Amino acid sequence: MQGYALTVKCPSARGIVAAISAYLTDLGCNITDSAQYDDLETGHFFMRVSFRSETGASLEDLSTGFAKIGTAFDMDYEFHDEAVKMKVIIMVSRFGHCLNDLLYRWRIGALPIDIVGVISNHTEYQKVVVNHDIPFHHVKVTPDNKPQAEARQMEIVEDAGADLIVLARYMQVLSNEMCEKMSGRIINIHHSFLPSFKGANPYKQAYERGVKLIGATSHYVTADLDEGPIIEQETVRVTHGQSAGDFVSLGRDVESQVLARAVHAHIHRRVFINGNKTVVFPASPGSYASERMG
Image 1 (spheres, helix red, strand yellow):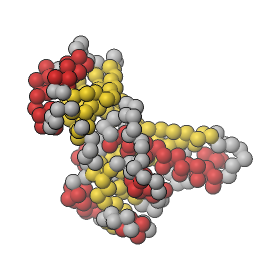
Image 2 (cartoon, one colour; image 1 turned 45 degrees about the vertical axis):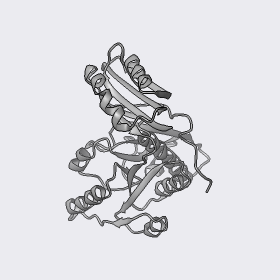
Image 3 (cartoon, helix red, strand yellow; image 1 turned 90 degrees about the horizontal axis):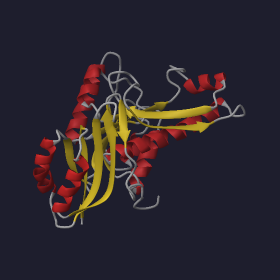
Image 4 (cartoon, one colour; image 1 turned 45 degrees about the horizontal axis):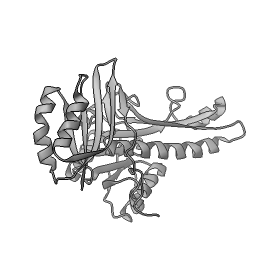
């Protein structure tokens, strides 16, 4: 049976869930997972439904027939084929922990994406990427060539048909134009010390201040640096007995995990932007399962 997902965002109203359920039932679909949220402050309703067609209904059939309901409730909706993997471009600089983690999860099937390229302003990870049979693009970035470099990056993204850009510790600020063009389709990762410890060596600064928690934040990229809607966060406890180097290592681990979880949520279309915040629904049963080991 074909598996699909329906995502819905619309003004809150009575009868939305009933209309969706009745429609899917009438078309011979069986709902396997469903999550919804009614934001009482904004009056917005969000819903994600996973279902299987037991009568062979196509994606086009489902979407066309749903138009009447969509119009009635003023919905922003979309049907998705869960077998189709999202095309992803990864961007990285000189810190490779997040890149390597994403490549491993992709390789074992824990992160079902189609990595269509890696872009870097350095060449350290070219061999690693090429050995995975993934196109590697070295785009050098300097203060003098930044507009041209970014134009080249966008050309790569568009030629590859990428749906998502993942900044796996890419240490360059993107322009407002690129952020707006790819709004809701660029995910970043950074430590959670901001705004307390800015600039170079934030973990050393945190160590010197005796912090007890190290964290990471993954968010959508906007023109406001590091202030986009947050998708995922995590913390790990540290003690006075650990060194600044320990802080860095622990920070890298949590950054990798948080970024992977944020990407996982996005590719399964579990994330809805809600103003300056996000609605992130729980993962469907089985969506974390790996296809193979190692």
